[in-house]
Image (cartoon, rainbow, N blue to C red; front, side):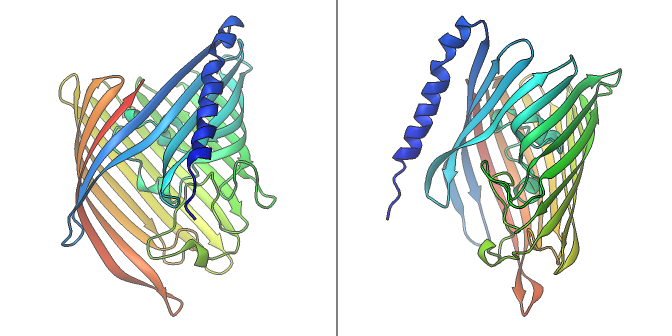
Length: 368
């Protein structure tokens, strides 16, 4: 039976009307509301082995809502429409919805669904590609990074001469949905960062979650390695430990970002799997509106990993970004990706195929 996308469209339309329709009422009560939208279009051309593939795509489109409820309370929401490959149509989702209470100048309590602040990227960028320095997220975001947490967060910002900050979170984690926490062990996270000079931020974090059934929910964004199927994957519990270190510097002429990720995935069946990922970006501003950049993106899960399963990926890319203004940019990126795919044979992991794929990507990202 062909699914009917109209209910989803109608639900999204009702959501937009509800949000936009409240603006006069909110203004009348001396509160402020700001609504922005972001999206992107993309052209991809690649050459896996002897084939040549090319396609245009309509990317994620995000509605971003900020509202000041009073002097201490504020609201932030992010609502995204994206293509759903499983359903072959577009679907809407709530990526962030939170209420923030600033009980002092530098300290706040946040309740709701947030981007888990484990590293600079997830804490600084939302779904609008307009703000990405490159075309797409690091590989680790598809397999290891807990994208969202729904719960309670304590936050501090710009404390002291070094502008220290902290985040402490407790809430529904990787195997959860927006309505249900599996099991009885919510996720916990602590992160610290400092901004010693203008444009620089250095931070570290630790995240823990116990996946009772090893089935990622809406908060994970976790895929499974090519060559494996989630339906046939390990169904037992996983103790998921994640440590991240970020170094970011976005200056007037030079840009640099390094995201290091270490993950220990512990199971009774296979023990502890040590997994690593590292993403490095460097940009040079050639003129006022032109930035040349390069990136190296490394990802590796161990042979005994039963959450993502064994997978190795290395991507190098050179790119050029033209910023027409703060609401429009175009990126051209020439990249080469090498992937090691594995599968299970007689209970043992066997690397059976290596893909080396050169590619060209062009992206137009915009906001209004």
